[in-house]
Length: 111
Image (cartoon, rainbow, N blue to C red; front, side):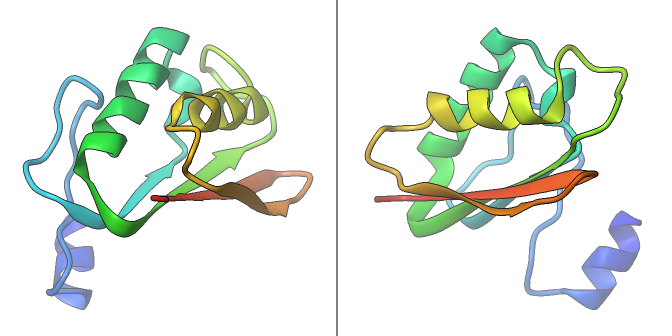
């Protein structure tokens, strides 16, 4: 999967890490967090939001994709998305792009 992504998008960087403890170096235009937030507790959600704040380039975007059904995590996908967005800087505009029965997509941008 990562090798295929790298092959298809050689201009992009892909990382598989245990966030928020592990985090890549650098500044990024896009940080995508898909199907991971609801496995974190509130302290880790806040730490991850801080990581994103520190490494998102001006004009950059954080894209969230969360399952809304039953999961094995610590909270629902809705609670995880809303908690993460609330932990980002208040001047970063955020909005919901899709709210479907099975998933939600949210975006936040640097101010």
